[in-house]
Amino acid sequence: MRKILAILLLIITIIGCSNSEELDVNPNLIIGKWKLESEFYTDGTSYSTDECDRKSTFDFRANNTLDSKKFRMINGNCILRNEERSYIEYKIENNNLEINGTYIDAGKEISFTTLNAIKFPDKNTLEIYFFDVNMNVFKHPSEIWKRID
Image (cartoon, rainbow, N blue to C red; front, side):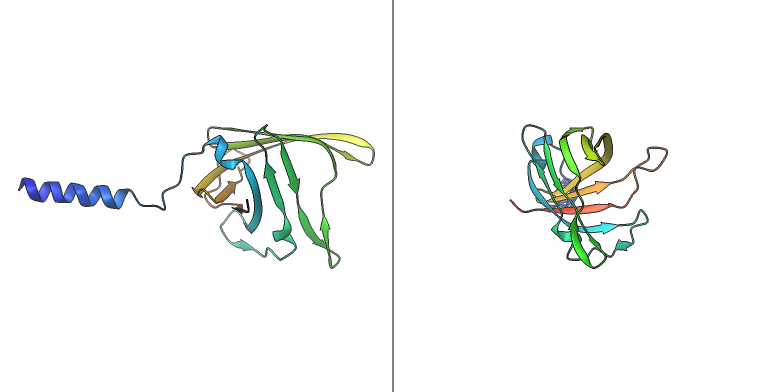
């Protein structure tokens, strides 16, 4: 009987420790360059991310600054959407990514802050989750990014 219990415990332990488990959010894991792979609506339906969208990159640096390049198709042209940015900083706390920055729009400086939940299904995949108006995290990722360096 003890042997059977030991074998069952071993099987449960092996099954419970799969490689697909999400990694704890280690702030250093985000450092590097990421490329947009796909986008989703909050219900999990795939957004039609095209080749232009997938040119978008994030470059998270060890000094907590971020270089963001977001592309969108506008009137048939793939356009870099970024405005003139003064700075972008980020921090990670409690599985949340907060991005703060300023940019220039029509000669006026605009400040912004975004807050998103994040997960790393593996060390080369970053999932970004949006919050609803009550600060509840949507259950489906809004964006999936792949490490490129």
